[in-house]
Length: 634
Image 1 (tube, rainbow, N blue to C red):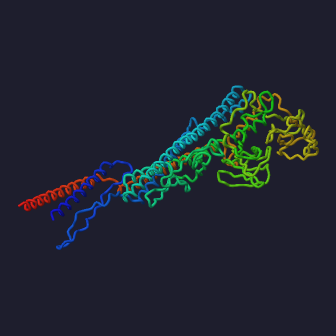
Image 2 (cartoon, rainbow, N blue to C red):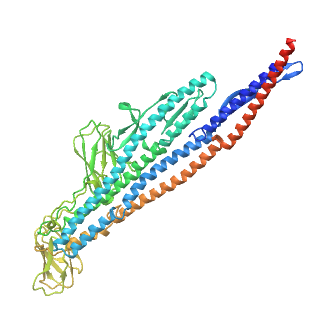
Image 3 (cartoon, helix red, strand yellow):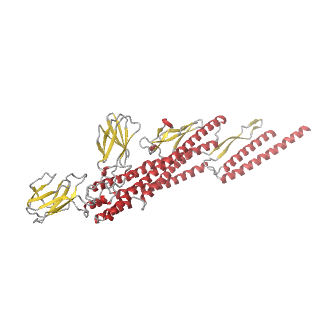
């Protein structure tokens, strides 16, 4: 019986020691990220039967388990991934918002300065200082477009740089998880018990990976954990891991795509499938707000340059020459995919800038048709031949021939702000005047008057624009027109207030003419003080030339800044809200898996007392054994 008592006491000592070691481990790792509280699982040893009944054989230490709740840990993972997504998104959008909304460095003051200078020229068309101010304001506006575009492009480049760092981190985590999987499988197969600390290390690695790119996991029977991202791409399967890489997009070499694998066999992963983690947040901003902002800014630049140029070309400069381009003519960027096998060259030009969309387009040639896809909404149109017009631009086959699979990317507005520039460098080239003027011939006896006249759009002007044309009244109600390009019509009916148009100009006659009265429309020589074209240029400030004729330059920019501001605020609110959700999920998880130092202190005392009590039993058993030995010696 003494030996039985001794054995029971030793098992108690072992159990108490196991409890003390486990409690100490918990206390030591109370602040270790990813640590799950451990506890000892004990059971009574199988009893020994004797003639007096069953006597206990002490206690067994069956296992050391960690307090793990898969549901709560999964909720934490999901919350952390979404929190990282919105935090990364909010940071990038905040930079863009500050750029566009800056009252000094934004586009609005430069736009206002340009049209203020135009109005000054309209008020003083012969003033060289006013013209110099307009030339300077034009250069300032072009520089502001270029500066904002450059800063948006730099933000996108910064995202690309962060992508490289993110991919490096993902590969490192994947490799570590695969190694831990291998160690866990070996440990479990050797001991048939879970290696808690290794499991915690793996969970922490998965958690860190999950913050970068949202993951889903599937536990295997052998103890390993398979990890997947996106639309099901496997990062880790058992002890094997698949590396990710970055590669230049086939559609836009300035943009980096996430690729599954490395080298020639790497396959791009659709950005839209990565909707969580900081990586997803970066991609969402780069492919969403940053691309949209750059396109919208480009659309404003293209529209402003085109409409101002169109009007400027209808005017006459300080030296009496026809007006030219005030800004550099915008161009549509068309790029052929490097893998194209055909010789086709696609050209594109603007047909109606008010109809331009904030989007790029992909043209794919297949089975004799050109499939044109607007990338902003993936809507498609198919044509059997070119040229064709879509969304304010005309697409044509400039040369060569396409073969099946040939692909082209058309970007009508992406580089509009980057490429804008001032096309003139002399104040005398500013076309403030109209190239034609009208006058009544001396000796008219009626009360009819003729307007100054205006040049019709669109440019280029009619080649006979400045040919002299005479309007002669044969009676108070009829008139003849004579001059090159008019066809010399006779007997035309006169209605007061009616517009009369020939050779690309329009005048208006009002009042009551007398038979024999004449009016002449001719070249505007010596018209340095004429402001008619400057007034037309100034009127463009309030013209609705964007978004299908529903917005002006300044209102379109205000809408852009407002939309970015709204997106930024939404991301900030979402980040704050998701951070609260994450904190709640962690609190719930820690209530089960976290270390409570007060509880561990109580356990420490409990196991200490158990150890001391078992030691006392050992002492008593030893004395009994010594007594028995003494009796035997007698």
